[in-house]
Structures are given as structure tokens and as C-alpha cells.
Amino acid sequence: MNLRLVYKRFWWAVLFVVVGCRVEQGGPKMLDWEWRLETTDTTAVLAVWAGAHRAQELQWLRGVQRVRLKLHLPDGQLLEPLELVPTLSGMADRSGEQTSLALHAKVSLQSTPARIPGRVWVQYEVETSAGTLRGSQWVERQHRSGALLLLPDILVGNGGVEFRLRVRRVQEVEGEYFPSSERLRVEVFQGVKRLWSSDAGVAFLQVIGAVEPVAVGMEHVYQYRWNGRLNTGQELSAGIYEVRLTLPARPFAYGVTVPLYWRGLR
Figure 1 (cartoon, one colour):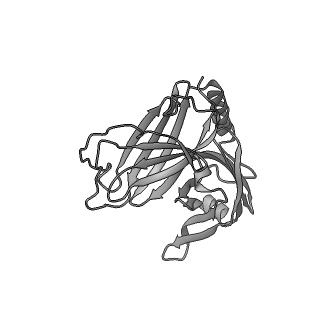
Figure 2 (tube, rainbow, N blue to C red):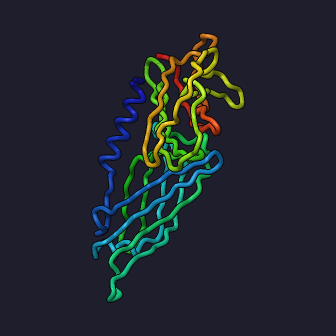
Figure 3 (cartoon, rainbow, N blue to C red):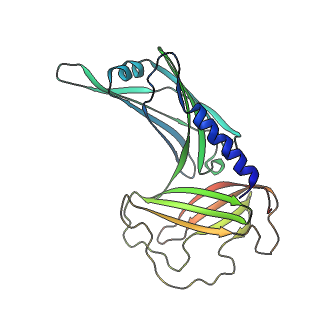
């Protein structure tokens, strides 16, 4: 594992523990916050939801005015700042007294989906009439590709790169299959130029296989390890690249593009 990357991740983990979910001016210690970073090949949307049931939480959530955010890359670089204007909805009992309240909001990112890694570090400030809630946490990218949600991850180490694609099925597809033994195809691009591909020169077995997961709601992990060398044998130079992860299924292939921050083999 790259020691500099480990060092940076360590301090971001420390920042999470220190910042965590700190509350100022008498706000509730914790609400049930749910963050979702949803992408397609052309769009990226960050959504948040928070629920309240107890009296103090209900009062605090009614006073929410805006949510300011900063999205960071895993190495700490700022991806982009955002601001959310939330809306509220709730339920009441037969007497008309409010029993629950939900905050929800979403905003489109200016960053193209190909620039967004598998997870981002979100720092947020929730301004209310009673005070300010500050917190931070990791949020995974969830990419919708046809009938699947794709959650990509790239682990860079001293010996190369491990590409992981966690897949969650959201819809059944009749007659879907893999036409060969190839399951995860990895392609590295610099602009429109393809520098390397995992299928180059490989003779896959011509066997039909199921696209996992088969059942809706289930998950499966595909992975591929690469030594950081091109098909010519030359080492990939340090730089920022785009990686296309594809499940070469039929009748429809699934895929997601993520950035690769490469510092070279060490």
C-alpha cells in the first residue's frame, strides 16, 4: 500500500472522529442522516434525508434553513462546494400533534460523473434557527446502469491496482447472460485514447454464465488486479486517468467510469 496514501487516509479518519457530528448552540446530539451520491453516465446528484421523532428533534428540524457542503476527494482535495435548500414533510396523530418530521433535499453536482471517485468525504453545516450542526462522513457513489447499481472502488498499492465493483440488482432482466468467462473488463483511458485493457490478447472460454446477482436486492462483488503495466509492458506514467469498468453482459452491458490517481509503481 502506498505509504503517503495511507498517511493521508489516516488523518482523514482522524478528522472524521474529531469533527464527527458536532453540535453547537443546543441542537440534538444526533439525527438519522442519510446521504446518497447517485450518478448516471451524464448526471450526478447528492441527496440527503434526515428524520426526527422526539420533541427536541422535531423542534430543531423545523428550524433548518440551509445545508452547506464541501465534497472532498479521498486524498483531501476539494471536489466542489454545494448548498442545499431542504424541504420538510411530516405526520401527525389524530389530535393533530406532529409525531414525525422528515427533511429531504438534493442538488446536482457541476462535476462530470467521470471525475467522481467511488466515495467522497462530505463536510456539512446545517444552519437552523437554534444553532448549527456540523458533521462529516464518507459517502459512496452509487451509479445506475440499467438494471444494476454499480458501486466502484479502486485500491492503489505498491504492487499495482485492485479494481472492485460492488453490484446491487434493482431490476430483473429476462434472458441476461455473460457470453464468455470474462466477468469484469477494465480499460484505462487518457482522454479518448485507450492506454490499456484487461481483455487485450486474452482468449476467454466460450461459456455462458449468469450475471450476478440474480435476485433483486442482492449484491455481488467483481474484482480485477492489475500490475500497472500497459499491454506493451511499459509502466503507466504517473498522472490522472479515467477507468472504465464494464460487465460485458448481453443483451446489455453495464459500466461506470471513475478517475484513477496514479503515482506510478513503487
